[in-house]
Image (tube, rainbow, N blue to C red):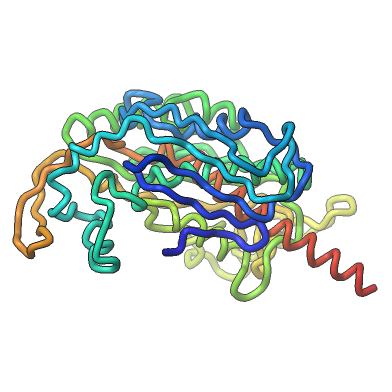
Length: 366
């Protein structure tokens, strides 16, 4: 099973939803980077369940323990192990799912691939696995705060079902996103989104939507041509998040609406800096960051667990009816915002360290 991500800054997540705990091991983190438990906990608190009435009521404090790699508030350059214990798992709610496959979940596919699965809570297929990603993302953010202090990663809920936030990426502010339970950028839209999620939950149904993300202050030159283009690794990172169904950068799927002359981003000089007058490229050209804002969007499907009877089959090949049980998000987007940001921090940190290595090798040859 592929549970690792990254090259120079590499993470491996571990643990199951209803096991003893979950966590991550980070290898390749530079030494002497300021890092505290509070810095990591701040991000985990944004992701944890039970934050409001529109997310899962599972009560988990998600308190992180730093097991290795940090001394006196600084990284040692050795592997960093982070652990979060599961406290409020109720496996009995999944007894019926031990033999019946939940529609649009990974149950059947895991059985077909491995011949065994952690049926309670979905095991590794559960979004609880993302705790390790968010914790590691906080470490990557600490690294980049030293290497690229002007870098900002900001994600927000742009759409829930058919309700859209009207703000453009350049107008979104972090304090507005964190100022409402939906994590969208407009207060009036947040109220409409929250009410739609409440209605779906009351009906035993669920909603999907879109998370948008902008990266401001990204240095020029991150990303590698051909197979490890920056947008390719970002797409890989985003599509590895549970419930994601689509990724687009810049103009994305609207690009065919333009002609070439309309879509091209003309260059101009802004002092001693090369800029573009438009940003249809989304801040990346030829797989390499050009210094403009990196803008992309991720589509999330409606939560697969719904509280109404659905047709399915069991592991004996019998057709049965199954009703969802347990505690679940009727819409995953509010809690997915910090997950998206974490995966961006991880991707950019890895590319930044690779770029520093390339520059160091170039200087050595000279």
